[in-house]
Structures are given as C-alpha cells and as structure tokens.
Image (cartoon, rainbow, N blue to C red; front, top):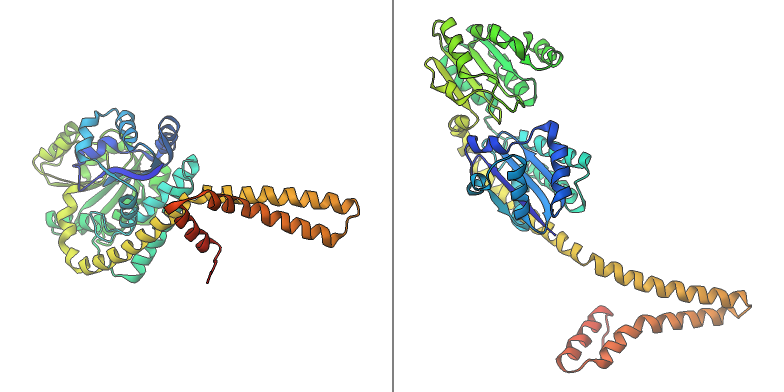
Length: 416
C-alpha cells in the first residue's frame, strides 16, 4: 500500500469536465464507502470543490481508483484521463500541503480551500475511511498550512471569487446601489459573496434556497427577503444581478426561462455569476444578448490582477513545504519497520514471560531467591544472545564481516 493523490483541477480540466466528476456533499460518505469497499483501497478521502475533485488514498493500485471514479460518475474513462493527475507518495504529500496553503488555488493564497479540506477529512472520518496514514497526512497538512500563513504573507492582498464578482458587476453597472441582487443558494460561497455585495448597499437583496428557513436566516442578516427555488420564475425579471452556488445536479436556470425574463425586462442587462460545479445556469444562457454570464473559470483574469504582490511569499511558502515533505516522508519510512520492531518485541516478551514463570515456580517450591534471580537473568541473557551468536558463528566471508560490524553497532561493542 502507498499514498496517492488522483484528481483534476482548474489547471488541468475545463469546467465542462470538472462538473462531470464533482461529488455532492449529501452522497460523499456513501461514495467513500463504495470506493473502499470494492477496490484495493485501504483508506480514502475526497476533496470536491468548484475548482477541483481529488481523491487522497492509500492503495496498491491507483488505476483501479481511476476506473472507480469514471464508473461512479458514469463517465467514459477516456474523457477524464487526459485531464487527470496521479501523484505518487512524495508528490502526493507535497500536493496536499500546497493545496491547503493556497498555493494551488485559482486565487493564490485564498483561505477557503483549507476549510473545504477540513470538511473533507471530517466526512472521511465519519465514513470510517480515514486510517493511520491519511489521518497523519492531514494532521501534518493543516499544521503546514498554519505555518505557511503565519510565516509568510501569502494571504495578503488576495482577491477572492466573491470580491472578483463584485468587481465584474461594477464593470456592467455604474452603481450596484441602484440594482436588485439575487443570491441562489445559502451555503458558504453565497454567504461570502453576499457579504461583499452588501458592502455596496444594493437597492434590494433576495435570497432563494431550496429550504426557506436557511434563506430567511441569510436574508435577515443582509436586510433582504427570502424565497424558495420554486418561486424563482416569478422574481427573476426584477433582478439585475444574480449570483448562484447550489449543490443541484442539474441547471436551475435554463436558456428558455432567461429568454422570457429578458423580454420582460425590455432587454435591460442582467449580470450573472455561476459559482456552482456542476453549473446552475445552462451554458447557452451566455449566448443571449443583454446577459453577462460568468463562471468560476471566467473569474481567473480578475483574480490574477494582484498576484504579483504574493509571488515572493509563495516562494517562501514552497521552501517551508519542501522541508515538511521530507520530514513526513521520513516518518513514513520509519513506519515501514514497525512490524519488525513489533515482532522483535513480541519475541523477547515470550522469552521474558517463560523465564519469569519458571522463576516463580522455583520460588513457590522454596528455592533461594538470590539463586533463582541469578538463574533467571543468566537464562534470559543466553536466550536473547542465542540468535545473534548463532548467526555470527555460521556466517562466512563478506556476510560475516557485515554481520560483525552490524552487531558492534547494535550493541555498542568497542574492541581493541
């Protein structure tokens, strides 16, 4: 068994491919159980965000995990393989450290990915698919991420997707303060976006969600109103800015619906940001006149604007990570000798118990305690030294020279 990371991200795959292998939070536990239960996978954790789907696993055959990923999502393997990376142990460790530290994100230095990774670990723990190796990996991963953010300025001047959405909207509308804003969903990403838009004091804020209660909670904080997803067709025409991020497996807003809405608006422009993977808004909506539709990939240019200020911090972070990777690899190497150490201890323990029981019997028969202790210590020493002595006496040539040198080292023997 060995540690591997398999996945695709915004650097290797377009949104159209990423959304085909995204996992939904509600089904993630069952997916993990399915992976570990039917493949040569000892441990597994899955990180699935708008920018990446990654499987961290302890397995002897990573190719079977690739096949499982394709089968699970009913996607042909040849569709995802050109975009897929499979990272063996050392690279997998480094990748995990870089992801958690914000070095592999679309937004260099962003902090949201760390929370998403912690949630992925929590889910794997709940599913029971997190063993010793992955547990230790993620413990160290979070520690490294903390060190990177404490010791460097990697997060300084970072432009988030939420902030980038506001900047794009301000390119379309002279003032957000005169526009109605609709947020579809009530998760963490929508909360972040809503907080950024709220600072621009829009004319009105509406929150639409599958469960009205969650929509009410967020809307109350923003001073807005709440509706259900079923009510969207009645309210869309009055919305100038729409930001959506749900876990829906199918689009919520289709081209036909938006076409009708544009006519009702008399072709006043609509600005839409779709942060969901899979997408909440059909791609064809972007072809309509008077609609400005942006996806997570479209935000990249805005986000890259302030990246230069963080390059030096990124170099410092990479140096920290490299040291930690080497340290973790050393820990894994020491784990490989654990069975040998355990076997050696078990062997010695059996000898100890045997001699102890013999000594106790002699004492019970009234033998002199000093003599019993002397016999026990001598017998135990003889048994412990029998193996090395026998091996040395029967070795010859170069084997004997090497064995003798090893025994000198093991027992700290100094001869004239």
